[in-house]
Amino acid sequence: MKNPMDIVDAQLYVRILENVDRAVVAIDSEGRIALFNPAAQLYTGLSERQSLGRHFEELFSGQAALLYLVRTAVQDGRSISDDENILLHRPSAAPLPVSASVSPIYTEDGDQEGVVLIIRDLSRVCELEEAVRRSDRLSTLGTLAAGLAHEIKNPLGGIKGAAQLLAMELPEGSHLTEYTGVMVKEVERVNGIIEELMDLARPRAPELTEVNLAKVLNDIVLFQKEAHRGKDVQFSLQLDPSIPPIQGDENLLTRLFLNLIKNAGEAIDKKGTVQIITKVASEYHLNQPGERPAPLIVVEIRDSGRGMREAELDKIFTPFYTTKSRGSGLGLATCQKIVSEHRGFLKVESTPGKGTAFSVCLPFLR
Image (cartoon, rainbow, N blue to C red; front, side, top):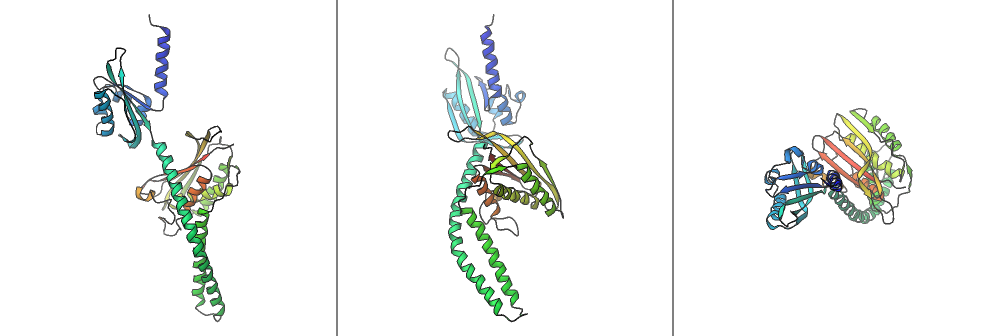
């Protein structure tokens, strides 16, 4: 008769394997898959039926790093891991950055009867690391830009003043006043760019108040519908009504979302959609010393526009880089700064010809 405690323990182990957020793959002494938990199915894109009983060499065919780890654990009877150099290839999705460890499984008699492969999804970690790198790069560029801006503003003021004095000296109706007008206008345009640059480098703590994201986004979309009336652009709001007001600087957040939603509309040439979605991110939390982990609120802005190539994505947060015919190239750099000032992060995904999605992740601080 089976011990009831053994049954309870077995059920507990099954529940743990079914709910753990890491892929667990057990491989028997003949190299065949004996266990393939739900996380493993999610990561690989393969069902349990497709996997059980198959040889690991076949299941992970062409994935040299994983095969090396499993072979080493099987042959040497020792644990081995790789924390950062593995891309898990999947049949119907992009490769997934993972870490993997393999450990031998022994019987009570000390005989090896297989190995267990544990895979951890590193995509979220990679996104956070990239957000930190962008923030650091922006800080360095902003400091450099502020120094240049200071040196440029003084000569610009002299040029503008000289152009205005020249215009006053010209006889009334002179065709030369057209040129002095252009000079003043262009000086003011360059001065506006310099002011944006100085904003990037100027440290300023956000003036925190309670911000109703739904109201901010609704107001922005209302005006953007008018701005894009000449094109067939549909704006769709999918706002989670359970999200309460968050702590933030309303002026800065309005500037942030206006820039992103405006860009989304401009990325559509003739016809398309812009989706604005708010939700609570279950996979992220902000941890501060001495404080409870704060959940993150995610605002996604998705467009069905022209999209961007990977080479463009690497540059879009760099000051002065722009894909527009008219633009300073400072908008997204400013967005990055605003998000960083709110202790959040910004990520972007894009597919040429299909569209772009920006995700703003902000901590829900009470």
